[in-house]
Length: 305
Image 1 (cartoon, rainbow, N blue to C red):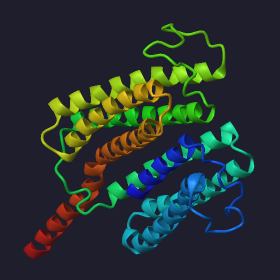
Image 2: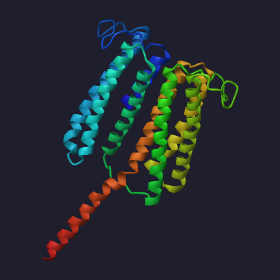
Image 3: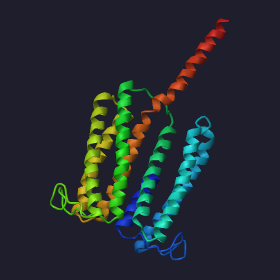
Image 4: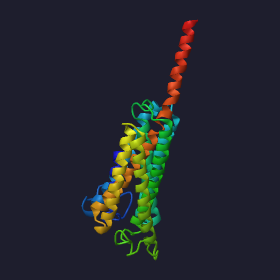
């Protein structure tokens, strides 16, 4: 999971430094697998190497966990799905270079990266030691938390895809002023870039409100717990994200601001997906608990005989 976050950060740096075509061929770079690592080639080829490392790490993790998850076939299937997603990602990365950065392919490439991150977070969460054994919140609080966290996670994903479109359409400065856009609260949609950029700002406000609502609910409905800490952390990350979005515009898309903005989006998605997954933990533990009760009853009956 941490490796995936690092890869997303590197991808953002590659674009922000205009290094996306520093290696004009694929899968090699200037005809070799080990080019001179300097300038834009350093960032672009490092991104490729880290992406290859992620494939190897995930395949190894799937192999190691395969035997341990015999009682949960969906975990195995999801892991293989993750491998397939990484293969598609690798091919899309190559197509992006060979086709000279078409907007739709580049945007899809980043969207699938966020989808893989969400899948990796789910698999990480459900394979943690003690999964299904922690105490539950009340049923109502749990269902409310699931709805809020799930909605916020979906909104974060949609916002990330919009952000990818803003990046690859070079629309980061389509609205060069803050907090208004083209000196108006609702600008004229004279270009697709303005429409996408303004939509990104609107969804950012909705997302911030959704995450704040989630945090308030967690603070009052949950006791001290991992879920409560995650909700509060998500609220903090959302506020930092808004600040980084503003900073990206006011610093004319500086590399640190833009790169950290992408990392913040990925981190927020990871937190919200983990929180949503945790709301299913108690339900995952119910069958095991029920089996233990049934076995105890059966043993008592046999002793009575």
